[in-house]
Length: 92
Image 1: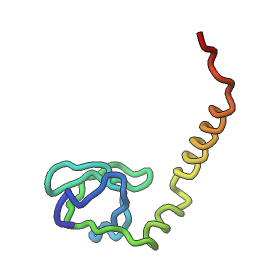
Image 2 (image 1 turned 90 degrees about the vertical axis):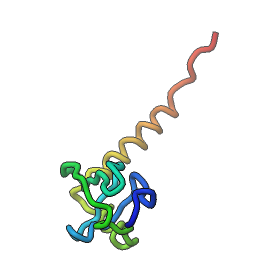
Image 3 (image 1 turned 60 degrees about the horizontal axis):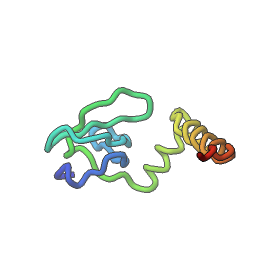
Image 4 (image 1 turned 180 degrees about the vertical axis):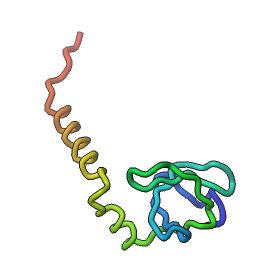
């Protein structure tokens, strides 16, 4: 990547230096962003080391069994379903 303007927070990028997919969390300055991979610490990464992850790389990242996102998503869906089944609040 050449500019942080091209990078979207929350998206997955391939770190060419580390040879792994990372999620961009936010901009630090014009040359660096915060990235994170699964349960590891947040790190600063030079944007020149990133490129947009391919579909295959994204699927591999999302299918990683060590990542707890699946259980988090299921819990959020279950919570939404539970909230939808609550009776309406009384009106005055």
